[in-house]
Image (cartoon, rainbow, N blue to C red; front, side):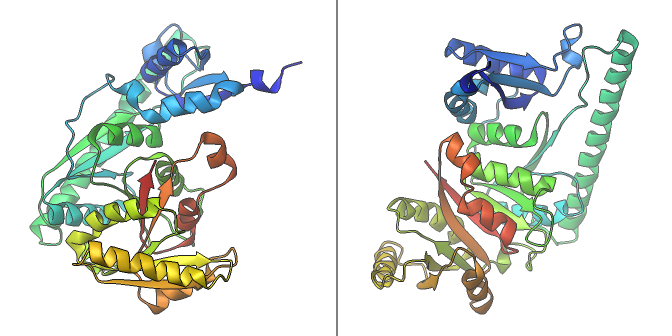
Length: 368
């Protein structure tokens, strides 16, 4: 009989080279692991490698995986740039809309944009005969060529918008990586510490399991950087339409630290901020606390226009919806505190709920 702690679970799905690196790091930490879907004959032609570990080691191994330090010497090194907007792109019809936001914000902060695409190569089995392996390599080359053509087409569209005066010109570059989208986004972000990671999401009326939504949700859950999620149905075309931001607080002292990150984000936008607390207790002291926070922040950030609002909360987000519409809220911001892997699996964060609920841009300040 296999004990629960002895069950093998998948920690990550990576390319073969990166799976090997992670396996070596785990072994050095005393965590045994195994690789699956590896083509022993031609490992360079094998992708979609699963790194599997014992369930008892999941939490410790997840901390190593999420730290990103295990890939510090893997692949291309990108110089840290504090004014970089990291923009994952998937070449969908929605991509140009996120480009408008990214280039607009980079222009406002005097920064640059990284157009970042991750493609997952076909998965090949080690049981395939050699002639099929050759065909698989040819198929891989075809996929790579298609990705390159799509990136070139996107750059051509961007240049056309810039020349037409519909997008500001700022420095940008493109990066194409192989692997799993959320893993590569998080690894690159850990190297460059971008000003923001700007991503798209489908919003409330689209399938929450769609790729663009699920990848964004995973990055929000695990990133250490500020993530800005732009819904497909957003009303404005760039950040010039973001004039009023709602900042949600649950009176955690760390919210005050998170507000500093929000201040840096909204300062180039000259936007008003309204501090919101969703109150499920009916405690009259909550409004007093909320006003005290507003007054404290007003003294610290005297150049900001600040307000506050206490909203009743019954486990749904109806009151917040009504407030967003009534007060013309252009973006919602909240801080997210890092939790262990089990808490993430069984208690989805408010940030993820908001991501699939709202058609309003979401600014998630990630805190430890």
